[in-house]
Image 1: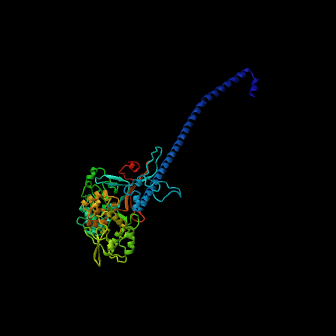
Image 2: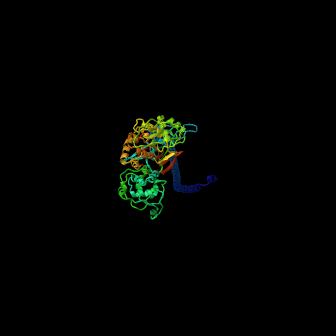
Image 3: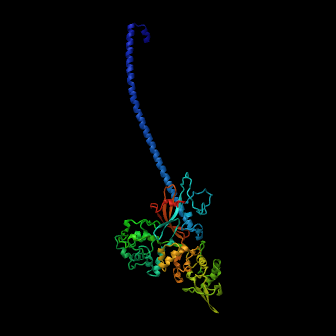
Length: 575
């Protein structure tokens, strides 16, 4: 409308209108020039806000990722610990299964003393699906074979293994690592020592004095702690003494449940009892050079100075003492032995003739009827078949010891005079070792199903053998020397002490009840590990395979203790 009106206006009016339009255009241009500055300022603020938001989101994401990674690592480690614990349980079950085997079956699998095929880096395979696999034995998958490491560099061996190890001390005080069990019958049982003391007062002190670092005062204090009375020995201590201490207590007057209790006895120090490492682990005593501090006299639990410097003891007492040694009264096949003191001669005759030579079985039956005559030297006589015998006769004489059947005679009164029957078990005869092995394995005079406290002649240390009454230092030296040269038949019994003239018949009969070549209570360190690392568990176990069923007697957690050897030695293929 304005344009139409302008068309009819005068030129002067048009000029004025152009001028007004220019002014308006200039104002619009100025506004346009000012507007971008404000917009730029606003866009910068928004960018900063966006950057802050992005950083917050990124940090939140990183925090979440870190939390999830930590949780994953914790779950993974927890799973590894649980797997290691289950492997440890599997190892204990395997040892209980192995202990339940007969002596013959153990030897068939390689024995218990040093058996890397079974006890070095043994793999624990995952369970097969239900209804598959063979679980008849613990080593059914790879029996009698060491399971080596993979040589494939691309293979990550994360499989769990367990090793059963024992540390032995040589006479030079060097540690020897072996993969096997430690027979508790290789040690002196304190219950047996107290029996010796009751039978012959003073025998207990003499046995204790064979231990390293022992003194008469400590020996008497130990005996006073172990015996049932309150009478103080010459250098000993009873409750009257312990009541005068700052923290008084009473003497136990009994054999303890654990050897660590002996630390309460006057004069007994932790280094003497447990060793220089003072950890209480008899299987892991360090053989490193003694520190200067170990040369100083130590203070025992009672506040008294020890009578011997710690540095004077090379080994600990727990390496030589035990509370648990025992063995099953069964033959090498796992069957109960024949009792020679059974009342019925007819049944006894049937049992003996099935497992022993006829002349030896007949001699045992004659011994039950007429009794045995013992002598210091071997006696000559007739064969057992020459003497009258009938299963209806009365078994009037028991057999006190299997050793009495060796080099003995049976004197039979008959109408024609006295008949002297010579024992088929003559220590000088060529077949003595074979006859003795059969007799000692298949028969017994002990009615108990478990025999406790006998010392294993083959594996006991020299110190332990010296504690046995009747074994002189010279005899012990011969035993240590000759036992390494025994053939398999001789190694089955202690009869070689006679056949090799180490002991005379009288001494042999005296020490025979204290000796064995077996043992069914074992101690060892069980270590769970794997090649790629991760949690390693270590536990010291004492397992009683003499009882039925086998059971765990004691365990000590040693995971936090440092291994006294390289972990690489536990892996198969590492020499």
